[in-house]
Length: 261
Image (cartoon, rainbow, N blue to C red; front, side, top):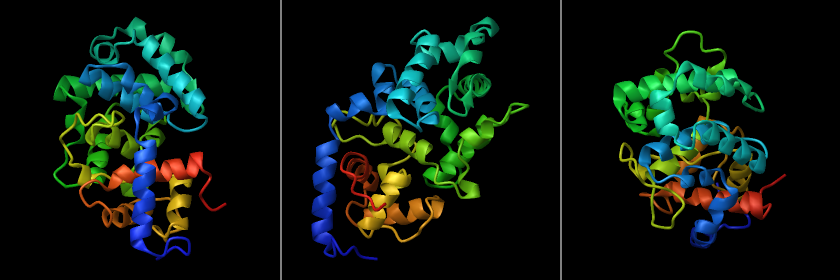
């Protein structure tokens, strides 16, 4: 598949690299959900806050950032310590939390599940360990570990299931934050469970629309197969770090309204 606007791969690579350089900078952080884990220096706090923020990362960005900050404040701005040591009475205020379809009941379930993981594994990163390679296998393993508690109360719909064909956009975004690092100050690069080459490009309506316009994606649905197709296409431009172009696709779609309507 080629784009009528960018039929030449060299020209397309130049565009992607240009926008990657433009948007992958510290000024990007302020208005992006990644600003929440950037509030912390401790790696466990970064991981826990990053996961919880990514979980609610849909809808209007100012609203989700405000709600993610509320979660962190209710956890005494020490999310890892809170998860490890919370008392039952500490959960009372969490019942009031709501972000679109994500309720306080869902949040409390996740707090309990995360505590179990930290007690067993020590680090959230280890919950993504799988016998199979790749990010989707890791996400599947993580999902299974998160849903072991009785009475999931509908929380399963908030943890994407790649086995059911989900692109798992928010979890792939979270893994990008944790795994890749290029010393530009946005992504953290604190997890070693995957290499950047194993990551999957986060796919949503914005990045999917841009990718199709650029000739990087032919599949019409924004599902797992499409995310894999897009990532494979981006590997032609950087096999070791294809997901860096998430910055370019996001910027072109959200900031420049580049995607097809």
